[in-house]
Structures are given as C-alpha cells and as structure tokens.
Length: 159
Image (cartoon, rainbow, N blue to C red; front, top):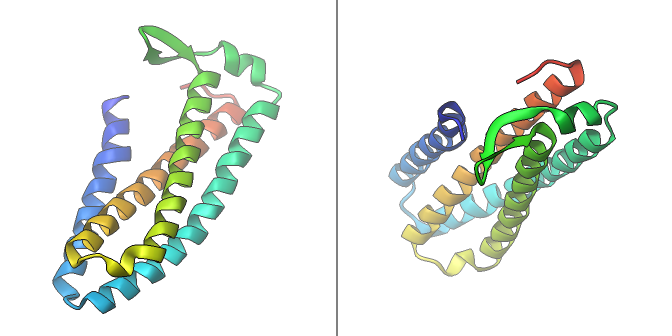
C-alpha cells in the first residue's frame, strides 16, 4: 500500500473517529443517552452501509462488463502480491472484495450491537462507537478511491 493511500484510508479515518468519539464522551455522561445515540446512529449506519453494498456490487458488475476488460486485465499496477506485480483487474477485484467483506462485517456488527448494546458499560460502548466510526469512514474513503479508479478506467487514463 502506498503511503498516501495509507494516510487517506487509515490514518485520516482513525483521526476523525477518535476526535468524534472524544467530543461525544465529553458531552454525554449518561449511559441511557449514550445507548440511544448509538442505536440511532447504528440504524443510520445500517441504511448507509446497505447503499454502499449496492454501489460495491455495481462497481464489480461494471468492471466485469466493461468493454475495456482486456485492457484492464493486461495493465500492470505497482502493487505486488508475493513479490509479483498484479494487474489492474486483480487489484480492483481484491479492493472491491475487501470492501464488500468489511461492509457485511460492519452490518453484522451493528445488528448485534443494536440487539445487545444496552447491556454494555459506557467504556465498551465508546470503544464500539470508535470501531464503528473508523470502519465507516475507512469504507467511505476506500469507496471514493474505487470510484476514482473506475472513472479512470472508463475514460481511459492510466494510474
């Protein structure tokens, strides 16, 4: 992973998440209010993730059905797996598969937390909110990069 991708997809989401949960922890001291906030945000996150899953599956479909598929399968990227450069096609499918996997995991996490979150301590709820926020922002940034990659493929630019 390139340094700029690491910063954009991991460091920035972590910073945003920590800041958001920090300010929330300073303003909310009652566990019933915190539980209500997490449940309402989880419902919103579930709806948003459902839409992102649809976009991810659409991206996979567009990549597979594009008329530039032969070019995508031949274009070598700077990314390596086991010391071998991979094609743009493989890179995009790995990236989108990772995104879909994380989206489904996060949907499951939110469903479980809505069901059982009311029995957790405040610290556990804050940690779950931090984890949830990080993965959501991380997925959003990865989706932006995937859309950008797809746009570059469709208009025919490289890298």
